[in-house]
Length: 262
Image (cartoon, rainbow, N blue to C red):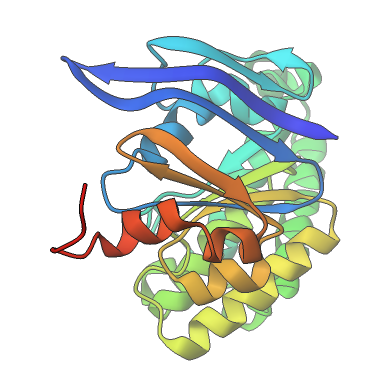
């Protein structure tokens, strides 16, 4: 069953077409990879789907709803979460406080928890709610084997753990679909191996995952299906084994031989 699909999605920036008529789909419960050379339009596609930017043309359907052009906060509350290429933690806050930020955002999605109503709640109720949010945040940290770092400042964590903390914060909003933008960027081999385990655990929770990644070993080992972009256009999709053997994909990554006839 498809949880997400785009129809003829296009994004143009002043005459430059970054995403060109792309039909992209994600099957519920699976891990989907989105790969391609630098500048292929992968992050731009993510940005259109998650509401960071608006498409120039086309439609985005999530969980049966047309979400084209909706702002990021509305899309998040419908059940899509994401991370970014560059780490965007609140580094001056503790590890557990960062995860609590994701939980508070989810709480805010409930009409009962609008700001005005929050302001008139009793102190006792607010305190109880904060305790519950704290305990739920600690549960997520335990899931990521980071509970021992709960009171550390986020900025003091090793790079790989900062990456995982971003994922934990995104998951705290309880998404149906999680987008990871180059989650292994800058990680050493041990950190990357642990990330692969983490993605497997996330999938076991029933969360659908889509990731952009340049680490082909990671992509080929954890993805059920892969879509390939080049110059903003989709050039291939299929299983990891099919993608590895696709001549167009090989050419996009490695280039043609200089003496090959065009």
